[in-house]
Length: 392
Image (cartoon, rainbow, N blue to C red; front, side, top):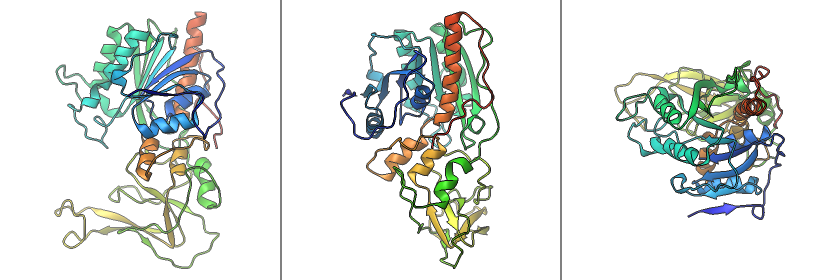
């Protein structure tokens, strides 16, 4: 089934950014809109977004009723030819490649990049941008036994595109997490002389995006309902007396066998935000220590022979992150409202998204490339660390 949401639909809307460049995008596997938002902020005009997940579709339509959002399977999508997009965007599914997923060479979702190739042959965009996880380098395409990254690059070259790809640590591009992403940029014909990817800048700490929400529970925002009283079989909310002026600190509440201390600093980026790791806040008498798990009597024993020590957090009070706090780590603006029937519905949308600020850095880079192509000039460099913009 294909349904389209247009201007007449939707109740909650974030402010659109008027196109300033005249360049346009067609988006596949749009998800909750992280890639698209970055390109919108860089002045690109939105033609169509294609997304199969019903809650992502709802989120897109409610936040951008002026976008044309097609709800359906990309494999059944046939583009119209009223306008050729300047850029084709595709953050194709990563579950078959990701360490957090199946990492299965035979996963049928691994071949969905071929739909990007199919549609690119039809609409012939000037640039194709594909985004995925690092493991494209280390998983091999069945049959050719090439790394998936090189297989995809070869197929893009076979339809007339010049391909560049690289790995990016997004904390160097205005995003407060060390998440790394694999990005392809393919130019139809030749790129402008001197083209290169955005240059990394300094690390981005979490303080500018989370400190206010941590210290002030009275802040009212969409998808934000902070509630102390985190229930856990392994961490302890002690209810010990504490001073209300004591700073609330960030803590990792899952993956307790991690080598990193779960009490984190506001002045560093977080590790990668994903759909599984649980983060939270602790206040008052905050402690973290390693302990041995009683593998003879405790619950949820996966490997009774293991002897790894596990982190245990205790504090006067604990709470988990809200969806808005996770969304801020992904640099979504506060007026971007996520819709879902359950916490998991929203968590998947946020965790699977491309961080908006990173997307905007890529979009500014490609905008300059398109301007150079139009003028027949050399590619113009940008300032380090890409976009500097206050979103919250």
